[in-house]
Amino acid sequence: MIDHAQAVALARRALAHLEAGTTDQADDVMPVPVAEYLDPERWRREVETVFRRVPLALALSAELPAAGAYKAFDALGTPVLLTRGRDGAVRAFLNVCRHRGAQVCPAGTGTRHRFRCPYHAWVYDDTGALVAVHKPGTFGEVDPDGLGLRPLPATEAHGFVWVCLTPGQPLDLDGWLGDYADELERLELDKWHVYEQRELDGPGWKVAYDGYLESYHIQALHRTTFAPTSTSNLMVVDAFGPHQRILYPAKSLRTLRDLPERDWDPGPHCGTVYTVFPNVSIAGTWEGHGVVSRIMPGPGHDRSRTEQTVITRSVPMTETDRRYTAQFSALVLRGVEEEDYRTGFDVQSALSSGANTHFLFGRNEVALQHQRRWLRRMLGDAN
Image (cartoon, rainbow, N blue to C red; front, side):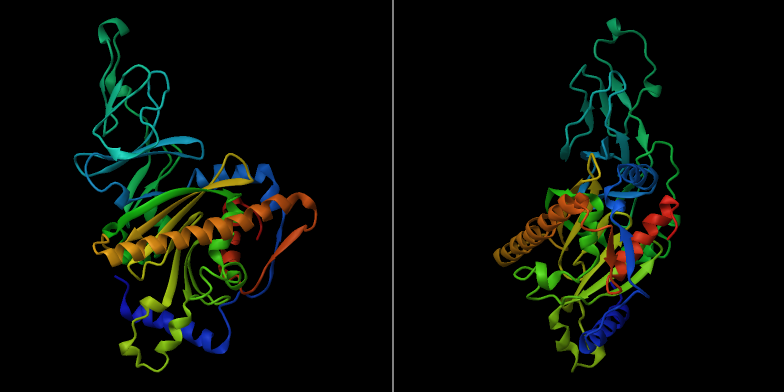
C-alpha cells in the first residue's frame, strides 16, 4: 500500500502549488522538431531500438488470474501468446506454429491448457511444448523437444507480465526499473481486478502518449469530463530513470488545508499517474478504481493502438458500486477517445502542413520533456 507519510508529503507539495498558482517546472522551454513525429526512419528506430529491446508491460497479472489462463494478441506486428501454466508461472511465446507458421491461438483471452493449430492440428501445451502431431505415421519423424513454441523473454513482477519482443534478448527487469520497482510494488496491482478492457485507435504513438504526460490541456479540452473535478496546469513530478510518478491534484485538495496532516487522507484528492517508459500509464490507483493504458505504435508512424484496462481494487458487489464503476469507465473512455485522441488525430493530420517546424514543450510540461529526453537518449541522439 502507498505509505501514508509519502502520500502526505506529495499532497503537501501539490497543495503549496495550488495555493500559489504554480506547478513543478523544467529549467527552460524545450523545442521539439516536428520531424520527430513525421520521419518514418526515426519511427522505425523507435520500434526496433526501444520497443523491441526493453521490457514491456504487456499484460496485468490480473489478466491471467489462474492456471490455464491465456492472452493472445498482436504487439508491433508480432503475434504473442501469454499463458499461465499449471505450475502458476506465466510464459510468453511467439504465437506461431512450428510446422507451417499459422497462429495457434486466435486473439483474445480465455482458459485452456492446450492449443491446437487450426491449420494442421499440431497441439501445444501451456508450457509451449509440442505434445501432438496430427497423423504422425504419415508425417514422418520429428523431434518434439526442438519444435515447441518459440519463447520470448518474460517475467512476472509488480502486478505486470513483462516481455521482450526480441527472442533471446536478456530481460533485466531490476536494472530497467531500479528504485521505481518499489513504487510499482506499493500499488499492489497483483491484487486488483479487471473490470473492462478495450482497444482504441489513436494517432501516432508519440502524439497519443504526449497527452498522458501533462495537465496543461485539461481546462480547455476536458471541460465537461475531467476539468470539473481536476486542476489544470498543476503537476507534481518525480522521475525514476526514464519512468515517472505524476500527481495531478483534484480541486478538493483544498479541503485538507485546515486539517492537521496526521488526519489527511490524500487519496480522494490526488489523481496519480505512474508511467512506465516508453508507453504505459497507470492512473487513479490511490482510490478503488484505476485505468492502465498501454500505447503501442501502429503499422506506421501516424497510427497507434491503445489497450485501455479499467481496474478495481475489489470486485463491484453492490448496485451502487457497479453503477459508479460503469460511470467511471464511461468517463475515462469519453475523455480519452472523444477528446484526447480526436484532437490527436487533428494534430497528426496537420503535422505535414508546414505550419510548424518545431513544437514547444513548456516549462510546465516537465514530464513531457523528461519522456522526450529519455527517448532521444535511448536512440543515441543528442538532447
